Length: 332
Figure 1 (cartoon, helix red, strand yellow):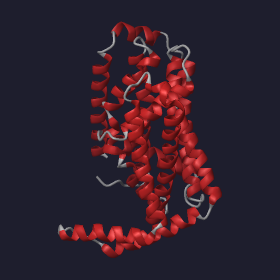
Figure 2 (spheres, one colour):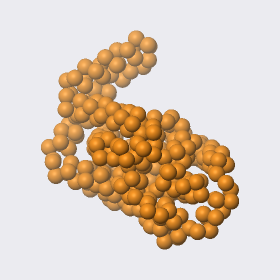
Figure 3 (cartoon, rainbow, N blue to C red):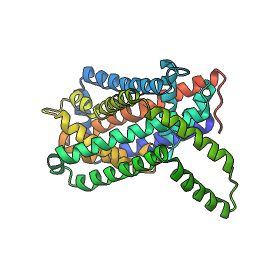
Figure 4 (spheres, rainbow, N blue to C red):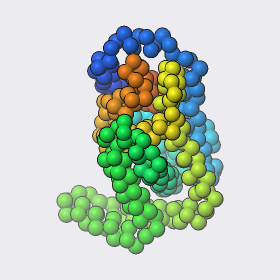
Protein backbone atom coordinates (compact mmCIF):
# COMPACT_ATOMS: atom_id res chain seq x y z
CA UNK A 1 0.00 0.00 0.00
CA UNK A 2 2.86 2.37 0.85
CA UNK A 3 4.29 2.03 -2.66
CA UNK A 4 0.98 3.03 -4.28
CA UNK A 5 0.53 5.97 -1.92
CA UNK A 6 4.00 7.24 -2.80
CA UNK A 7 3.25 7.01 -6.53
CA UNK A 8 -0.02 8.86 -6.01
CA UNK A 9 1.69 11.60 -3.98
CA UNK A 10 4.46 12.00 -6.59
CA UNK A 11 1.80 12.32 -9.32
CA UNK A 12 -0.08 14.93 -7.27
CA UNK A 13 3.10 16.93 -6.61
CA UNK A 14 4.04 16.90 -10.32
CA UNK A 15 0.48 17.97 -11.11
CA UNK A 16 0.68 20.88 -8.66
CA UNK A 17 3.95 22.02 -10.25
CA UNK A 18 2.28 21.84 -13.67
CA UNK A 19 -0.65 23.89 -12.32
CA UNK A 20 1.70 26.55 -10.99
CA UNK A 21 3.74 26.75 -14.19
CA UNK A 22 0.73 27.01 -16.48
CA UNK A 23 -1.18 29.31 -14.13
CA UNK A 24 1.93 31.48 -14.15
CA UNK A 25 1.27 32.13 -17.84
CA UNK A 26 -1.96 33.73 -16.72
CA UNK A 27 -2.46 36.87 -14.66
CA UNK A 28 -2.93 35.79 -11.01
CA UNK A 29 -5.48 38.54 -10.60
CA UNK A 30 -7.63 36.90 -13.29
CA UNK A 31 -7.47 33.63 -11.37
CA UNK A 32 -8.76 35.30 -8.19
CA UNK A 33 -11.53 37.14 -10.07
CA UNK A 34 -12.72 33.93 -11.71
CA UNK A 35 -12.64 32.09 -8.38
CA UNK A 36 -15.02 34.63 -6.85
CA UNK A 37 -17.52 34.20 -9.70
CA UNK A 38 -17.86 30.40 -9.64
CA UNK A 39 -21.44 29.14 -9.96
CA UNK A 40 -21.57 26.16 -7.58
CA UNK A 41 -24.71 24.76 -9.22
CA UNK A 42 -22.90 23.95 -12.45
CA UNK A 43 -19.85 22.74 -10.52
CA UNK A 44 -22.02 20.25 -8.61
CA UNK A 45 -23.58 19.18 -11.92
CA UNK A 46 -20.06 18.51 -13.22
CA UNK A 47 -19.32 16.29 -10.20
CA UNK A 48 -22.63 14.49 -10.76
CA UNK A 49 -21.70 13.85 -14.40
CA UNK A 50 -18.40 12.29 -13.31
CA UNK A 51 -20.17 9.92 -10.88
CA UNK A 52 -22.75 9.10 -13.55
CA UNK A 53 -19.92 8.25 -15.95
CA UNK A 54 -18.45 5.83 -13.39
CA UNK A 55 -21.87 4.33 -12.79
CA UNK A 56 -22.46 3.77 -16.52
CA UNK A 57 -19.08 2.03 -16.78
CA UNK A 58 -20.05 -0.15 -13.79
CA UNK A 59 -23.29 -1.16 -15.52
CA UNK A 60 -21.23 -2.17 -18.58
CA UNK A 61 -19.18 -4.53 -16.38
CA UNK A 62 -22.33 -6.04 -14.87
CA UNK A 63 -23.82 -6.66 -18.34
CA UNK A 64 -20.63 -8.24 -19.72
CA UNK A 65 -20.32 -10.38 -16.59
CA UNK A 66 -23.97 -11.52 -16.87
CA UNK A 67 -24.49 -10.33 -13.29
CA UNK A 68 -23.20 -13.68 -11.97
CA UNK A 69 -20.40 -12.36 -9.75
CA UNK A 70 -20.37 -8.62 -10.29
CA UNK A 71 -23.23 -6.83 -8.60
CA UNK A 72 -23.49 -3.11 -9.33
CA UNK A 73 -21.71 -2.30 -6.05
CA UNK A 74 -18.84 -4.70 -6.78
CA UNK A 75 -18.58 -3.43 -10.35
CA UNK A 76 -18.37 0.15 -9.06
CA UNK A 77 -15.56 -0.85 -6.68
CA UNK A 78 -13.77 -2.53 -9.61
CA UNK A 79 -14.06 0.65 -11.70
CA UNK A 80 -12.75 2.86 -8.90
CA UNK A 81 -9.77 0.58 -8.20
CA UNK A 82 -9.02 0.72 -11.92
CA UNK A 83 -9.25 4.52 -11.77
CA UNK A 84 -6.57 4.63 -9.11
CA UNK A 85 -4.10 2.33 -10.85
CA UNK A 86 -4.70 3.94 -14.25
CA UNK A 87 -3.89 7.29 -12.62
CA UNK A 88 -0.49 6.28 -11.27
CA UNK A 89 0.88 4.16 -14.15
CA UNK A 90 2.26 5.18 -17.57
CA UNK A 91 -0.24 4.83 -20.44
CA UNK A 92 -2.83 3.81 -17.77
CA UNK A 93 -1.50 0.23 -17.93
CA UNK A 94 -2.03 -0.65 -14.27
CA UNK A 95 -5.81 -0.47 -14.14
CA UNK A 96 -6.83 -3.67 -15.91
CA UNK A 97 -4.41 -6.06 -14.11
CA UNK A 98 -5.56 -4.61 -10.77
CA UNK A 99 -9.20 -5.03 -11.80
CA UNK A 100 -8.64 -8.64 -12.89
CA UNK A 101 -6.98 -9.38 -9.54
CA UNK A 102 -9.79 -7.71 -7.59
CA UNK A 103 -12.50 -9.57 -9.55
CA UNK A 104 -10.68 -12.86 -8.98
CA UNK A 105 -10.95 -12.24 -5.24
CA UNK A 106 -14.69 -11.80 -5.74
CA UNK A 107 -14.88 -15.25 -7.36
CA UNK A 108 -14.55 -14.47 -11.07
CA UNK A 109 -12.08 -16.72 -12.90
CA UNK A 110 -8.98 -14.86 -14.10
CA UNK A 111 -9.52 -15.88 -17.75
CA UNK A 112 -13.15 -14.69 -17.53
CA UNK A 113 -11.98 -11.40 -16.03
CA UNK A 114 -9.39 -10.91 -18.78
CA UNK A 115 -11.95 -11.69 -21.50
CA UNK A 116 -14.54 -9.40 -19.89
CA UNK A 117 -12.14 -6.43 -19.77
CA UNK A 118 -10.79 -7.18 -23.25
CA UNK A 119 -14.30 -7.23 -24.70
CA UNK A 120 -15.04 -3.98 -22.90
CA UNK A 121 -11.81 -2.47 -24.24
CA UNK A 122 -12.59 -3.48 -27.84
CA UNK A 123 -15.99 -1.80 -27.72
CA UNK A 124 -14.50 1.24 -25.97
CA UNK A 125 -11.87 1.69 -28.70
CA UNK A 126 -14.49 1.17 -31.40
CA UNK A 127 -16.74 3.90 -29.98
CA UNK A 128 -13.74 6.20 -29.52
CA UNK A 129 -12.86 5.68 -33.17
CA UNK A 130 -16.39 6.66 -34.19
CA UNK A 131 -16.01 9.85 -32.15
CA UNK A 132 -12.76 10.59 -34.03
CA UNK A 133 -14.38 9.87 -37.37
CA UNK A 134 -17.34 12.10 -36.48
CA UNK A 135 -15.02 15.00 -35.68
CA UNK A 136 -13.09 14.53 -38.91
CA UNK A 137 -16.33 14.58 -40.91
CA UNK A 138 -18.55 17.12 -39.12
CA UNK A 139 -16.41 19.43 -36.95
CA UNK A 140 -13.04 19.47 -38.70
CA UNK A 141 -13.15 22.92 -40.34
CA UNK A 142 -14.82 24.65 -37.40
CA UNK A 143 -12.38 23.43 -34.75
CA UNK A 144 -9.25 23.54 -36.97
CA UNK A 145 -9.66 27.32 -37.26
CA UNK A 146 -9.03 27.65 -33.52
CA UNK A 147 -6.63 24.74 -32.93
CA UNK A 148 -4.14 24.55 -35.83
CA UNK A 149 -2.76 21.20 -34.65
CA UNK A 150 -6.18 19.54 -34.90
CA UNK A 151 -5.71 18.02 -38.41
CA UNK A 152 -2.62 16.05 -37.40
CA UNK A 153 -3.90 15.10 -33.92
CA UNK A 154 -7.31 13.94 -35.15
CA UNK A 155 -5.82 11.87 -37.96
CA UNK A 156 -3.13 10.36 -35.70
CA UNK A 157 -5.70 9.46 -33.05
CA UNK A 158 -8.01 7.93 -35.63
CA UNK A 159 -5.19 5.77 -37.09
CA UNK A 160 -4.02 4.66 -33.65
CA UNK A 161 -7.48 3.56 -32.53
CA UNK A 162 -8.23 1.87 -35.86
CA UNK A 163 -4.96 -0.11 -35.58
CA UNK A 164 -5.78 -1.20 -32.03
CA UNK A 165 -9.27 -2.32 -33.06
CA UNK A 166 -7.86 -4.29 -36.02
CA UNK A 167 -5.47 -6.22 -33.75
CA UNK A 168 -8.12 -6.90 -31.11
CA UNK A 169 -10.69 -8.06 -33.65
CA UNK A 170 -8.03 -10.27 -35.22
CA UNK A 171 -7.42 -11.86 -31.83
CA UNK A 172 -11.17 -12.40 -31.38
CA UNK A 173 -12.17 -13.70 -34.84
CA UNK A 174 -9.07 -15.49 -36.14
CA UNK A 175 -7.83 -18.03 -33.56
CA UNK A 176 -5.49 -19.76 -36.04
CA UNK A 177 -3.74 -16.53 -37.03
CA UNK A 178 -3.61 -15.46 -33.40
CA UNK A 179 -1.95 -18.72 -32.33
CA UNK A 180 0.67 -18.36 -35.07
CA UNK A 181 1.35 -14.76 -34.06
CA UNK A 182 1.60 -15.60 -30.35
CA UNK A 183 3.76 -18.65 -31.18
CA UNK A 184 6.12 -16.42 -33.17
CA UNK A 185 6.42 -13.99 -30.25
CA UNK A 186 7.08 -16.87 -27.82
CA UNK A 187 9.86 -18.18 -30.08
CA UNK A 188 11.55 -14.77 -29.99
CA UNK A 189 11.28 -14.73 -26.20
CA UNK A 190 12.84 -18.20 -26.02
CA UNK A 191 15.73 -17.10 -28.23
CA UNK A 192 16.29 -14.24 -25.81
CA UNK A 193 16.52 -16.97 -23.13
CA UNK A 194 13.46 -15.71 -21.28
CA UNK A 195 11.31 -18.16 -19.34
CA UNK A 196 8.11 -18.89 -21.27
CA UNK A 197 5.10 -20.93 -20.06
CA UNK A 198 3.95 -21.83 -23.56
CA UNK A 199 1.23 -24.35 -22.61
CA UNK A 200 -0.34 -21.98 -20.07
CA UNK A 201 -0.31 -19.12 -22.59
CA UNK A 202 -2.13 -21.18 -25.25
CA UNK A 203 -4.61 -22.55 -22.68
CA UNK A 204 -5.54 -19.01 -21.65
CA UNK A 205 -5.72 -17.98 -25.32
CA UNK A 206 -8.19 -20.78 -26.05
CA UNK A 207 -10.35 -19.75 -23.09
CA UNK A 208 -10.26 -16.16 -24.30
CA UNK A 209 -11.42 -17.15 -27.80
CA UNK A 210 -14.32 -19.17 -26.40
CA UNK A 211 -15.51 -16.31 -24.23
CA UNK A 212 -15.18 -13.77 -27.05
CA UNK A 213 -17.19 -16.11 -29.33
CA UNK A 214 -19.91 -16.07 -26.69
CA UNK A 215 -19.98 -12.25 -26.68
CA UNK A 216 -20.08 -12.05 -30.47
CA UNK A 217 -23.01 -14.50 -30.60
CA UNK A 218 -25.15 -12.14 -28.51
CA UNK A 219 -25.86 -9.02 -30.58
CA UNK A 220 -28.25 -7.52 -28.01
CA UNK A 221 -25.49 -7.57 -25.40
CA UNK A 222 -23.04 -5.92 -27.79
CA UNK A 223 -25.55 -3.23 -28.82
CA UNK A 224 -26.34 -2.48 -25.16
CA UNK A 225 -22.67 -2.18 -24.22
CA UNK A 226 -21.93 -0.14 -27.36
CA UNK A 227 -24.69 2.34 -26.48
CA UNK A 228 -23.61 2.62 -22.85
CA UNK A 229 -19.99 3.13 -23.87
CA UNK A 230 -21.08 5.94 -26.17
CA UNK A 231 -22.85 7.53 -23.19
CA UNK A 232 -19.82 6.95 -20.94
CA UNK A 233 -17.51 8.81 -23.33
CA UNK A 234 -20.06 11.56 -23.92
CA UNK A 235 -20.30 12.18 -20.17
CA UNK A 236 -16.51 12.18 -19.89
CA UNK A 237 -16.15 14.69 -22.73
CA UNK A 238 -18.88 16.90 -21.22
CA UNK A 239 -16.90 17.92 -18.14
CA UNK A 240 -15.27 21.05 -19.68
CA UNK A 241 -18.76 22.24 -20.67
CA UNK A 242 -19.95 22.28 -17.05
CA UNK A 243 -16.64 23.79 -15.93
CA UNK A 244 -17.17 26.58 -18.47
CA UNK A 245 -20.74 27.18 -17.29
CA UNK A 246 -19.58 27.30 -13.65
CA UNK A 247 -17.08 30.03 -14.61
CA UNK A 248 -19.67 32.05 -16.53
CA UNK A 249 -18.26 31.43 -20.02
CA UNK A 250 -20.80 32.97 -22.41
CA UNK A 251 -22.14 31.38 -25.60
CA UNK A 252 -20.26 28.13 -24.90
CA UNK A 253 -21.01 25.53 -27.59
CA UNK A 254 -21.63 22.01 -26.30
CA UNK A 255 -20.76 20.38 -29.64
CA UNK A 256 -17.50 22.35 -29.89
CA UNK A 257 -16.53 21.36 -26.34
CA UNK A 258 -17.16 17.69 -27.16
CA UNK A 259 -15.02 18.02 -30.31
CA UNK A 260 -12.16 19.76 -28.49
CA UNK A 261 -12.22 17.35 -25.55
CA UNK A 262 -12.35 14.21 -27.68
CA UNK A 263 -9.32 15.33 -29.72
CA UNK A 264 -7.47 16.23 -26.51
CA UNK A 265 -8.38 12.81 -25.09
CA UNK A 266 -6.98 11.05 -28.16
CA UNK A 267 -3.83 13.18 -28.07
CA UNK A 268 -3.11 12.36 -24.44
CA UNK A 269 -3.13 8.64 -25.28
CA UNK A 270 0.38 9.19 -26.73
CA UNK A 271 1.73 10.61 -23.43
CA UNK A 272 3.64 8.12 -21.22
CA UNK A 273 3.54 10.04 -17.92
CA UNK A 274 1.29 8.64 -15.14
CA UNK A 275 -2.12 10.19 -15.58
CA UNK A 276 -0.64 12.15 -18.52
CA UNK A 277 0.42 14.64 -15.86
CA UNK A 278 1.84 17.84 -17.31
CA UNK A 279 0.63 17.16 -20.84
CA UNK A 280 -3.04 17.13 -19.76
CA UNK A 281 -2.77 20.55 -18.12
CA UNK A 282 -0.87 22.03 -21.05
CA UNK A 283 -3.21 20.44 -23.56
CA UNK A 284 -6.31 21.82 -21.86
CA UNK A 285 -4.75 25.28 -21.78
CA UNK A 286 -3.95 25.09 -25.49
CA UNK A 287 -7.25 23.59 -26.64
CA UNK A 288 -9.71 25.49 -24.46
CA UNK A 289 -8.13 28.93 -24.27
CA UNK A 290 -10.17 30.03 -27.35
CA UNK A 291 -13.37 28.97 -25.57
CA UNK A 292 -12.65 30.00 -21.95
CA UNK A 293 -10.67 33.15 -22.68
CA UNK A 294 -7.51 34.35 -20.96
CA UNK A 295 -9.30 35.39 -17.78
CA UNK A 296 -10.84 31.99 -17.02
CA UNK A 297 -8.57 29.40 -18.63
CA UNK A 298 -6.19 28.83 -15.67
CA UNK A 299 -8.95 28.23 -13.14
CA UNK A 300 -10.89 26.20 -15.71
CA UNK A 301 -7.87 23.97 -16.17
CA UNK A 302 -7.52 23.41 -12.41
CA UNK A 303 -11.20 22.55 -11.91
CA UNK A 304 -11.31 20.28 -14.98
CA UNK A 305 -8.19 18.41 -13.92
CA UNK A 306 -9.53 17.87 -10.42
CA UNK A 307 -12.87 16.54 -11.68
CA UNK A 308 -11.50 14.40 -14.51
CA UNK A 309 -8.40 13.03 -12.76
CA UNK A 310 -7.72 13.80 -9.10
CA UNK A 311 -11.23 13.00 -7.89
CA UNK A 312 -10.92 9.48 -9.34
CA UNK A 313 -7.40 9.12 -7.95
CA UNK A 314 -8.51 10.04 -4.42
CA UNK A 315 -11.71 7.98 -4.40
CA UNK A 316 -9.91 5.06 -6.05
CA UNK A 317 -7.40 5.04 -3.19
CA UNK A 318 -10.29 5.00 -0.69
CA UNK A 319 -11.78 1.94 -2.44
CA UNK A 320 -8.37 0.25 -2.55
CA UNK A 321 -7.95 0.83 1.21
CA UNK A 322 -11.41 -0.63 1.81
CA UNK A 323 -10.47 -3.70 -0.27
CA UNK A 324 -7.35 -4.22 1.85
CA UNK A 325 -9.37 -3.87 5.05
CA UNK A 326 -11.77 -6.66 4.08
CA UNK A 327 -9.02 -9.17 3.38
CA UNK A 328 -7.83 -8.33 -0.13
CA UNK A 329 -4.14 -8.02 -0.88
CA UNK A 330 -2.46 -6.18 -3.72
CA UNK A 331 1.09 -7.21 -4.50
CA UNK A 332 3.69 -4.44 -4.16
